[in-house]
Amino acid sequence: MGIHKINRTARTGLEAAKEELETINVGNEEIKKELKIGTLITPEEKEELIALLRDYIDVCAWSYEDIPGLDTDIVVHRIPLVEGCKSIKQKLRRTHPEVLIKVKAKIEKQWNAAFLEVVKYSQWVSNIVVVPKKEGKIRVYVDFRD
Image 1 (cartoon, helix red, strand yellow):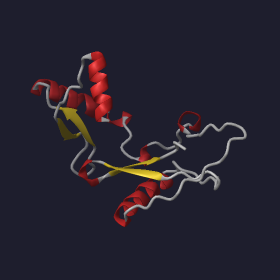
Image 2 (cartoon, helix red, strand yellow):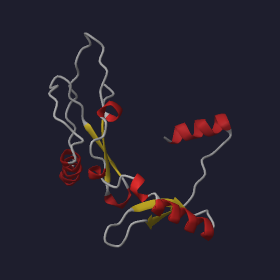
Image 3 (cartoon, rainbow, N blue to C red):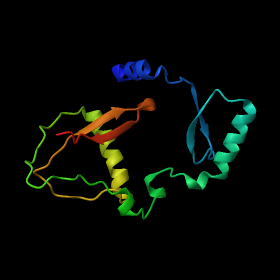
Image 4 (cartoon, rainbow, N blue to C red):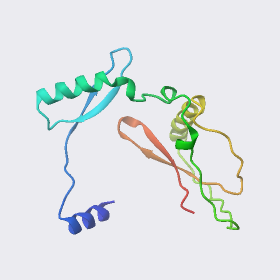
C-alpha cells in the first residue's frame, strides 16, 4: 500500500489529508450508535453535524438485523465463472484459535440476520482473510484471487 500511495502522490502531486477522528455517540447510553467524525471542524459545525446525524439516525443500519428483507437483486454476491474453466481449491490457511472465535461470532451474526446462505461448491474453496481493526474488532474477507 505504501508504494501505491507514493506512486499516486508522484503522479498527481497530491497527498491524502491526515485528520484525527473522534468517536461520537448519536444514540443513548443504553443503545450506543457510534460514528467517527473529523476533528478539523469548528465546535459550531460539530454541533450542527451531530444534530443532523441524530435527525437521520433511522437512515443508518447499526446492525445486520436493521436491514431485513434486503433486495437480493442489489446485494447478492455472485462469482462469474467462465464456462469450462478449471476449478481451484485453495490450500487451507491456518488461523489462530482466538481469531477463529471472533470470525465465528461475526459469521453467526450474519447467519442469524439471514445475510448468508449455504451453497455447495466443494470444487471451489477459497480461504477467509481476517483483517484486524482498531479496538480489537476484525473484518472478514474471502480471497477469491485464484
